[in-house]
Length: 105
Image 1: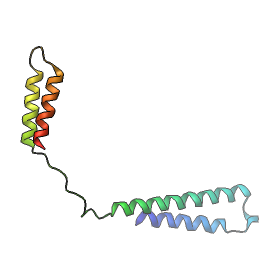
Image 2 (image 1 turned 30 degrees about the vertical axis):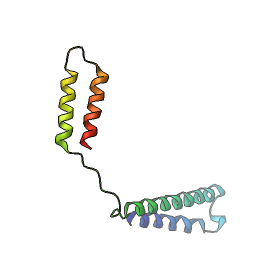
Image 3 (image 1 turned 120 degrees about the vertical axis):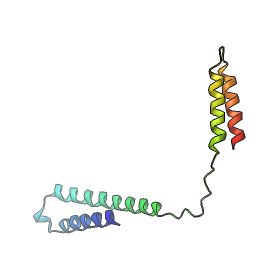
Image 4 (image 1 turned 90 degrees about the vertical axis):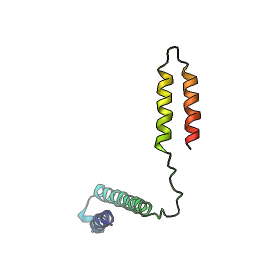
């Protein structure tokens, strides 16, 4: 995994710098390096978790339900006709559309 390799390289570099004798770095630099290392460890764990989820086996997932397009198109056309009527009752059109779509399932 490419992101893991990059993060591991950065982590190794930061760890090596953090391991230098304290006389060669200031206290603020040491604190910054420790926070950087912790942040990189967190990012690495997150990247590995996301990669694991991306590789998840989906062969046991239920199939997606396919609704016949012709049926839904007929319902949409009927609804458009209902909405185009003078003095239309919107709730009746919506109810009829829902009933029609339910029959398509």
